[in-house]
Image (cartoon, rainbow, N blue to C red; front, side, top):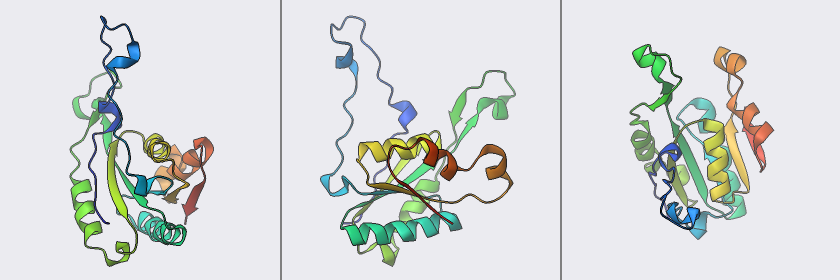
Length: 175
């Protein structure tokens, strides 16, 4: 059972309250229920980099050994508008990211994914938040990420380090 799912970025799913509604929760959009084959699966962050490919390989083995599904998460790029327009407010915009489609096609052709059920989920926003959110939605047993190397990780902090501090489930960091 192989496939992929392209969902809307999480920041586009904010409910709009109906001022005339008596129940404020009635205005919320119901979250799509996740496939039971992927409940208690393994979430892995994947962007096509070498470290994320190693994390994916580890997560495949982990999902295979536990007999669970694999939830591959690609978080699309978001940049502040100040980068684009030179304006003052720190508003974030979604950058068109066709990388998810390319990654989905590459994954669909990968022989090493044939032994486990998997889906590809696209999100937009903060990588750590989105990985943890997907883990929560699917009640994942673990989140697997690759380590960050280089100057960007030293300046802003690595995704793996930030995720390990705030996650509510085990985080496995692959060097």
